[in-house]
Amino acid sequence: MTKVNVYKTDGTVKEKIDLPKIFDTPYRPDIIKKAFEVIHSNQRQPYGSDPLAGKRHAVASVGKGRGMSRVPRLTQGQAAALAPNVVSGRRAHPPKVERNWKEKMNKKENKLARNSAIAATADKDIVQQRGHQFDKNVTLPIIIDDDFEKITKTKEVITVLDKIGIYTDVLRSADGTHIRAGRGKMRGRRYRTPTSLLIVSTKDTVERSSTNLSGVDVTRPQQLNIEQLAPGGVAGRLTIFTKSALTSLGGAK
Image 1 (cartoon, rainbow, N blue to C red):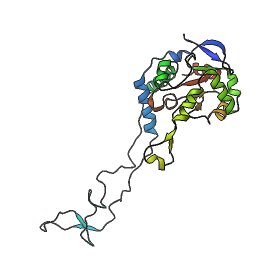
Image 2: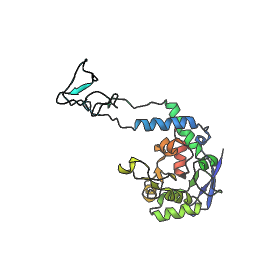
Image 3: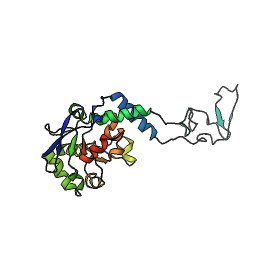
C-alpha cells in the first residue's frame, strides 16, 4: 500500500496514511478517453434546419429542348430555386433534429474508467504531463485534514494552498486565461480558462470558499466523474481530498 502525507491547514504533515485500494487500479488512458467522449456525446443538443428551408418557392421545370438546364425555376422569373446547389435552394443533406447522438458504455468499463482516473491522481508523472505545477516534495494525491472544510473565506484557502505548495497551479490557470479563438466569442464563452485544482470534500463550505479561484472545481466523493478527473479526456488532474472524503471514497463501489 502507498503511504501519503495528511497535511494540516498550516502546511505541516500531520500523519501518514495508506491510500484505499481504488488507487491500485491500472492506468487505462484508452478507457478514460472513451468514457469522456461518451459523456460529451450525451450532452449534445439535437439540432437541424427547418424542413421547409429552401422549399418556399413556386417553381417548375422548363423541360427539355430549350438549350438550358432543367433545374426547377421560379414561375415568376427565370432564377433557379428549390434544387440543391443553386442560389436560395435547399441543402442536399441537412442536419436533422431526429438524429440520435446518444452513446452507451458498459457499466464495468465506466467503473474502470472512473477508478483509473482516480488512481492517476496519485502518479506524479501523469499529473506533471497535464501541465500542473506543484512543489516537488508534495505527496499525491494531496490529503488535507478535515479542518480545511471549516474554512469560509477564499483568502484563507489561498493561504493553505500556498503553504502546502500548490497555489502556483492556480496562478498558472489565471495567467493562462485567454480570449477564445473563433465564433464562441459571440456565444457567451468568450474566455477559456485552464483547469487547475480539483477539490473533493464532503461539505459545501469548501465550495463556497474555493470556486472563485481560477480553474478550481469542487465536488463530492459520490459525484466524481471523468469530466472532472480527466478534463479533455486526459487523466492526471491535480486533486485535493479531505481526509473524510478519502475515507468515503475508499468505500465507493
